[in-house]
Image 1 (tube, rainbow, N blue to C red):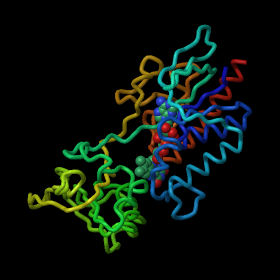
Image 2 (image 1 turned 45 degrees about the vertical axis):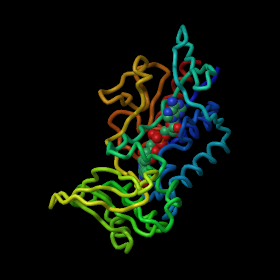
Image 3 (image 1 turned 180 degrees about the horizontal axis):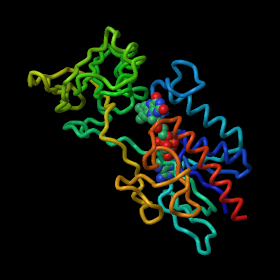
Image 4 (image 1 turned 180 degrees about the vertical axis):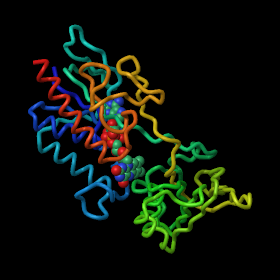
Length: 311
Ligand SMILES: Cc1cc2nc3c(=O)[nH]c(=O)nc-3n(C[C@H](O)[C@H](O)[C@H](O)COP(=O)(O)OP(=O)(O)OC[C@H]3O[C@@H](n4cnc5c(N)ncnc54)[C@H](O)[C@@H]3O)c2cc1C
């Protein structure tokens, strides 16, 4: 019987792992399909205190992971698929995607909330053949070529900045009249000579190349003039979603969820005794690394108190 199993190794899960390890609770972390979480995809993180300017999300998350390992946290590259309460409040049985069953006294849900994909014709068809959601992961495939970034926020600008260093030209397609990003990022990205801003431009379709096997361009509409035209690019990076999806349907009979599927929790405590929650999957939270890490810390204290009272 484990004392605490943490689902997720993003900032929330790793912070909780560090705190519970230091409290002697010997946590086991299940990393799921995205070890080190969403932030590991960020080309650059400028808003997490204490890191050097230009640190990538991967570097930051690797540092957290290494710190947790050094404190004795155990990791498994597994995904949880079902949780069943054991009789007499003894804890929970946790089924993994491999079929293995684990037992634990407490569980921390720190599985994050994946960005909902942007729905645009051609996107699904060319996923992995020119359409990407991760500039850092896939940018090098388009070295010396022209690419488009679709988005209007901080993530789009950071992706454009990264890709400008790798690609011949970056077309930044934004349906609004301006970008919603902090001035410091705008000041860095807007002057870049190989970044072309296409504001008030709606992406309509991702088009095939002549051979039809990869991306050849993006069909767009200028929202001022209604003119439709094609921007010829070899790659399209999607930095805009339709909100977040917490992937919690499988927990709906176990803990209270809000109408969008986010877990309802206060100070890490959910409606189910012994199940805790932290980070982006919690209802009403700010979806940032620092808030996820702070929530992981708060939940770790709640878990410690719960296990102490149970003993
Ligand atoms: C491109 C991009 C750039 C960003 N840039 C910034 C930034 O500059 N600054 C900032 O503060 N925030 C940024 N964010 C947001 C930030 O990444 C998130 O707010 C943060 O990662 C949330 O942390 P989390 O621990 O709640 O979840 P996540 O980081 O999403 O981690 C979730 C973890 O849960 C695991 N998991 C999922 N399902 C299961 C399961 N069933 N069983 C076991 N494990 C599971 C996943 O594999 C993953 O390890 C960015 C996000 C993106 C996508």
